[in-house]
Length: 126
Ligand SMILES: [Zn+2]
Image 1 (cartoon, helix red, strand yellow):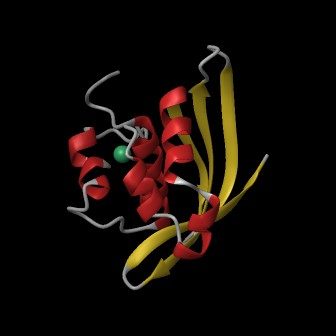
Image 2 (spheres, helix red, strand yellow; image 1 turned 45 degrees about the vertical axis):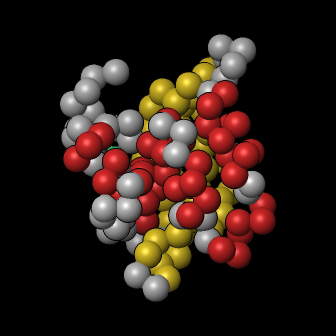
């Protein structure tokens, strides 16, 4: 991987892009930034962050161990943000599973801004 490009695809180093958000040093300023940081969290197996940024009403559907298994069993190749509004993001996440099969996860995600933080709520899959 080119170290000048973040996992999320932006032309910035991970340390200057998603990492400070994942570490809690910075807040994601937009739903899209949160979505990008969550993709980078899958790529770096930051399951605690993925749980923390899932809206509390939805956490029962996403166990930390399931998230971690899903994150580590795939190779996360590329993120493509197709369209973003204030509180939605449509994206494609390209990954290779543990059978070395290529997949594209195409999702239209909903986000909510609550008490100063963005959270992932849910998504429709294509
Ligand atoms: Zn990033």
